[in-house]
Image (tube, rainbow, N blue to C red; front, side, top):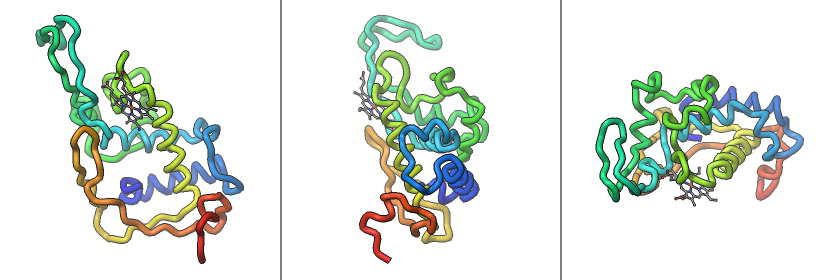
Length: 193
Ligand code: HEM
């Protein structure tokens, strides 16, 4: 949401996609996600720039092996720097920029070593699909039901604290107003004029 507030053109495009694909008669649900490709692009681009587990989980080599020319002895603890991989200018065009549309041209499943917010291979995250769907549904519902505005002129503060997982250093502060057409449960529950 912070990135979308800093990139109103992306927020506008996402809102249009949801309005056309789902409308306002009901809250968007799991079966709508296949019709919302730009929503997936926004979520992927956010996971690229801010992977929630930036060094993945520690791995350990079960036998001697060679990785890109480096000899790795058995029982070596290996940390994978997903953060650095996701911002590598040799791999990504203008890596520091939030450009969800870059994922329109990428088949994520085929480029597993370039985009690894859930790790890759046998020890990759078994909850990847559930995680993606949960985040997409939450973000999609917020965009479907509310107009969003910044409360400051400047760019959003994207500083983060990172230990095993990455967290935003300052919580998002923004103004949300119920959309006139919205009749979804998010806006009728606890809504006071
Ligand atoms: C956006 C949400 C999520 C993100 C970004 C995420 C990310 C990750 C990452 C990076 C790993 C380590 C992979 C590696 O080291 O190669 C991992 C492992 C794991 N994740 Fe997730 N995860 C998410 C959601 C979930 C959910 C919803 C579940 C369960 C319902 C889950 C269960 C697990 C488990 C059990 C492992 C350990 C797998 C193993 O060591 O074999 N994750 N996750």
